[in-house]
Length: 387
Image 1 (cartoon, helix red, strand yellow):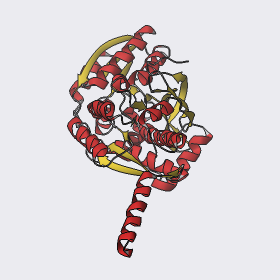
Image 2 (cartoon, rainbow, N blue to C red; image 1 turned 45 degrees about the vertical axis):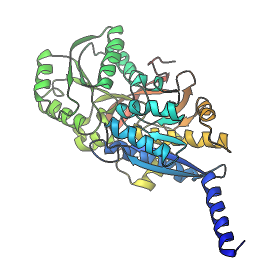
Image 3 (cartoon, rainbow, N blue to C red; image 1 turned 180 degrees about the horizontal axis):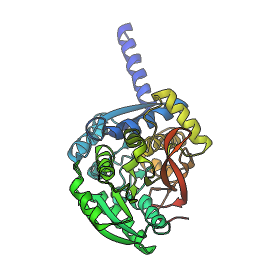
């Protein structure tokens, strides 16, 4: 064989070996647009885990291939997922900031037998749509039901519900109402607001006239919760003693930083707070700050990206030689570890997470405004049932 041809054969063989020794993970998240915060938090969480633990597992190099879903654009998410599978030859796809993205991609996951790791999208039915879905965030029922139960037993008996006018909003309203009324509470009224609404004055005036003790709010994180809370304060509801009860995203780190002391006293429910008092979380925060700066602090999406990456690495380590999709899903079903948010595990029957859910109140602690955990519901499953 001529030397040049022999060199080419060796080069191609080496390239093939490198390809076999690489696990490609597609990362499908909104990195731009109104939900770019989702992509930043989840993407940073994934990157941090690899920074801490290295990007070579069981002799395989981990390659992340990022694609920008731009938010609630199901057609774009579907096209990008197809490209990641057929063109980029990914072994796993992770991310999914919003429910419409996950639902659009479910048939592709099933047809291509590609494991997909949900790191935020929270509508309960998502994992039912494909046997290749596993979720490391939460379901809305899982987070909101404990809030309804807690409010009804902590002096809040009459609440007005406000939710975004899309499927997750309806689910959040139903879960909160069921738990709240079961505990003896009364829902004084309910309204659904457009998912892009930023002027809440008219809505809040109606609420003020109804004189509730509390307002349950569920809207996507970003501009909406800030706009709602500013109007809530400006119209005097906070001053009148009305308690704002937040379903998941309404009072994350970005909102607190924007509102400052005006956010003090807001009650919310979530599976994580950066103020969580554990050794694991203190290390997580220190490493996050070293990698990305002190602000914004990680929120529930940051820790979901981190934990989802942790789980992916564990699965790759267990499979070692080949990322077989069915063996990967079996491995995901056995995942259990201590997260910065507390102990988590995957329910093998549902492929959904079981975790603690915390009731949090915005307080100033050691000079900083934080979501201080004031009550814990342990081992809450996807239906919202606690241990």
